[in-house]
Length: 254
Image (cartoon, rainbow, N blue to C red; front, side, top):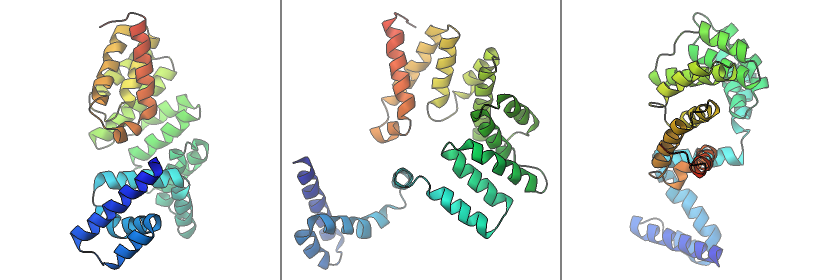
């Protein structure tokens, strides 16, 4: 029954759109006699192209494509590299592999891209290599690389590098330095990853009350988001809410 109602709703919505916008009346026959195929065809041909300028639609479309075909960008990057073996194309393939968590494959490509780059190397590329090194267990080398790299130009990039540095420092046992970095970047970085990692380290160090306050901020911000925005960081929100529930059950209060 729910599927049937959804089909009817889509069919009606397409017919209303057809009448209001004055589209070709031949669509009406397809919508009436082929409700599923006709409605889907109408949506993709007549409605979706007009929505491409909407940022949320573009993001949703990219997410759907990534879910259906996660290897798409890897294939495209490999094809580009086959056509032109350049530093930029090696970097593109490294980024695509790293995005899928295939950091071991990305590392040599990052290194080759840096070696082939004329002049000063972009600090952002060095930071990406450091991130992949950290993800493969090479935390010491990752920190050396970050220390040697210059600062990225934009504040957002600097904050992301600072969060990576905090993760590395925390892993290497330099907890106090990591906490100071987290405390600074959580005020600026979008999303909740920095806050959740900060809270986790606070709990690890025995600062439960401070962690509670940070997670309550996450909870408050989450209430203002719709489910589509929450879905982008679903894992982080679940961890945050589960941890917050545990802290409250143990009687921790701000």
